[in-house]
Length: 134
Image (spheres, helix red, strand yellow):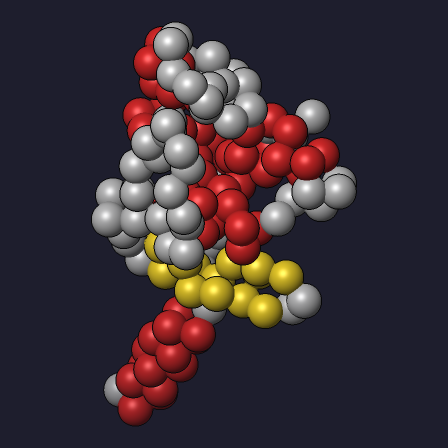
């Protein structure tokens, strides 16, 4: 009996210490279709149904890395999506999705080895955006 309790306790501790499974691009794609495609388009190029007549046009999300010198700017993209530290863009209305993207936290590397606890849905959307860079 004592051995069973020890093994059970060790398994519980190991599970609690295990790193959370990071979301992958397909999980984020579903969120993108639901929340972003209306403006940014199914391809992420800024040609969504609601983009017609918008000035300025929604951002082409497939060139984020190119516009940032070749590296995907994780921290800047996270800030833009959730509305944190985002200033107004004249004539454009980018909703703040922070409240919509709540959930269990996962560690997202935001640069220089710094990991930020990030809601899983937001990390999933980030993974998707990184995957569509051209």
